[in-house]
Image: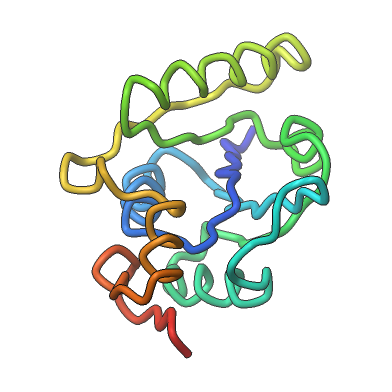
Length: 155
């Protein structure tokens, strides 16, 4: 049985923290779906989904185990549809842990065959998240140091 994982998120935009978690998780899995969740109830995103897909594919162009996809609905249902047995999540802070723990326990209740795997972010990426990057962009700052190399947020 293959070890398939899903790394869900909005990736609006992908950050160096996301990249770090994915690169460190790759040895653990045979296949990793980076899954952009499309939530019709969520406020508007800053970047169109097509651009986010392109950026993620660009960052991981030499990683054959990675597939970038979009999905709607429950993450646990998407995992089941691709035969994933693992959900990958990055943790920056204790607040992240409390939030993610509640989701992981609910997912386990919904499908006890899918485990959530948490990786701590490396210290240098602890303060970085997509919300902060969007705020920097919104107010005209230079957010390029927080996203993977080669991503042009201003094109």
